[in-house]
Length: 337
Ligand code: ADP
Ligand code: MG
Image 1 (cartoon, rainbow, N blue to C red):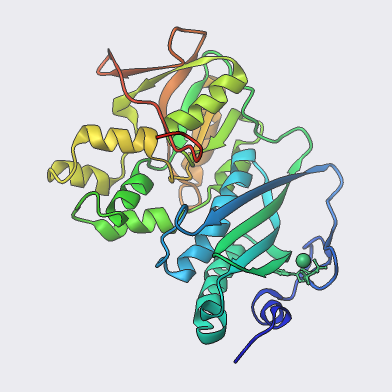
Image 2 (image 1 turned 60 degrees about the vertical axis):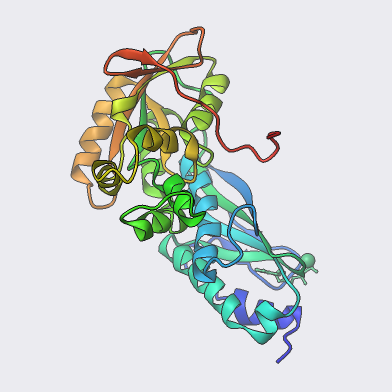
């Protein structure tokens, strides 16, 4: 069966958007969608592309690709403290095979995409469907009360630096997939890489409490550097407080993974999509009290260091109170090897 562009849109992308309080005055089918933003809110908009061979392996399960494409976009909204509302999807599909001979691919892709969209009540309101090398670009839109968005430029000297959940799992998952390492629990790390959990609820909770926030997509040190440069300050990180998952600790204990390699994954690996934020000591107490009552909904948070005034190094590392050095790079598409 040969489906036209419009058949594809009708079959796979168009769903009912006349949901109560959706804010969708007009959804898929016209030249533009029309969206209502509630009084007193600002629109938070973010776009991310996933390109085959760069952001994902050609043989990735389409369910996981659809899921992750949305997850990384929702993570950006989470990092701003925005409530996700709408998304548009520009998808370029290779010649024939994926859609016409094997419709399962698109069915599975949209199943993964809508599984996460439904979880967060996000509605697909438009997009573009073209033929070419497989690539996916999403633009998510969220709302945040005016003036309460979490920016990168408001960290203060003396603030604590925190991260959510665990770090390093995504990078180890990538190393497992690229066959760079062999570990005892490979699927756990691959799942961490491919089934990322966007920290939307935590981001919303951080409104008015955190002084700055970013999501860790390109590696902890690189993403922290964005906060430090924007806020014109420096940071102290204590290596032993980096939160490794139990599985990661298990790999270290069983000598499948060197402790320093785990630290390096955590610092420069990326693909964790945890929130990295700064918070004053007094607000941290408030935050911890709230989190103590909501453990089921929220990820854990760990204090990994503090914001300092200008120092020779943008980030100084300490291990058992001794100054240590670590490579501080991260992912950069345009960096020369
Ligand atoms: P136009 O030519 O006016 O840009 P299109 O023919 O590309 O419109 O798309 C028709 C409608 O379908 C539009 O409302 C568009 O937003 C929507 N659409 C197209 N592709 C997708 C997609 N992949 N996901 C969601 N909506 C889509
Ligand atoms: Mg178009």
